[in-house]
Amino acid sequence: MAKGTDETGSNRPKLALHVPEPRYRPGDTVDFSDLNIPEPGKQPRPDETAPAKDTYPLCDDLIRVLGDDHQAHGPWDPRLSPETLRQMLREMALVRAFDNRMYRAQRQGKTSFYMKCTGEEATSVCATHALAGDDMIFPSYRQQGCLIARGYELTEMINQIYSNKADKLKGRQLPIMYCSKRLNFFSISGNLATQLPQATGFAMASASKGDSRIAATWVGEGSTAEGDFHSALTFATVYNAPVIFNVINNQWAISSFSGFAGAERATFAARAIGYGIAGLRVDGNDPLAVYAAERWAADRARSNAGPTLIEHFTYRAEGHSTSDDPSAYRSAEEREEWPLGDPVTRLKRHLVALGEWSKEQHEAMDDELDAMVRAAMKEAEKNGILGHGLHHPFGTMFEDVFEELPWHLKEQSEQAIRERQIKWPEDPAE
Image 1 (cartoon, rainbow, N blue to C red):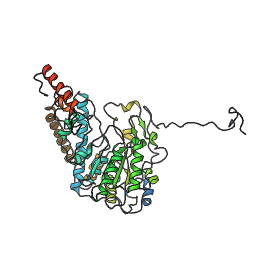
Image 2: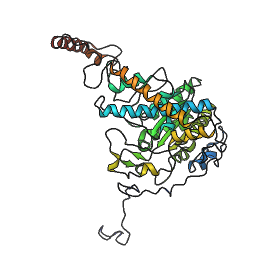
Image 3: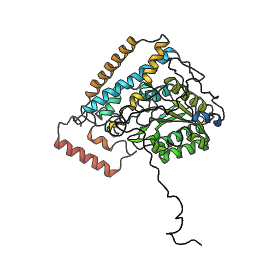
């Protein structure tokens, strides 16, 4: 019979709680030599309809195509035409030019908030190229490249960022939380990981109707700790939903490093193993590898072979958002020491090595794209910027909420409009 609690287990070692801690803090010297960066082209490429278990070695590997010689190697080489490569390069460069201008706009007080995706452009642009145009995209908040790759108008994006009178979302979404029904781009949510079960649900509905459209969704590695991630994968597993889960492991969830989401124990791609679905881990800064992995997963989904989880191993080169200062929690050396390089630079060098591009062409393109973004900004600013009074009519706050507006809200709407007209009879917003 057990003795008193003061004696029970007194000879046992004390338990200790493990709290993840990043290796490098501000001021530290960075050394990424511990990362296992395999040689490009050495990773096997299973058939798209192979059993999921055939992909499990790839969950601990890293699919790479572009080598230090700037050439494509191995079975994952998608063999894209120079025209397609130049188009992807142009769109990644456009995303970067757009990000830089919008960052400045926020600092100038033209908008309240912005989020850049510097260093992660391939994970959205190149992945979108691997999908069909009518496939449904369920993004997180750093996938502006998906919209740009599908040809969304820059002025419309800026109108939304400025929440002005031309904002198609009528100022109801945080800046950068776009949506486009025309381009099959689902509305971005500030609540993390909600898009995952929605993507699974769309994919299940598409399959149940005998349609051909698949779903692709994006989530940061930190958000995989949300319950929605596990619910989405459970349903996708059980019903063999034609959906792709893109986990963007950029090493940081705001100021929390990836260890808080489980990166110290296993790769994020390895989570596919527990669900019995296909899993791939890909060099997220290798545009060709990203395209190849996404296309493989899309073909697998369209062949009714099931869902795929792809971990895009990349790095968030700048702050989480305009509200964040990364120098407060990570070493300034990390960006320069990141061993997988920069996706724009890598694709540029590949095209140059093929004889399909040049430094002069790239410089001219950058100038052209910057001018394009500046022109779009000027056009959007005609519709108003933050705090300058040009916004949607006051009465629109009651619209698009109910199918039929209840009587008491009709009264409130009419009263609010009358009072505003009395106070500001010449208000152009009305």
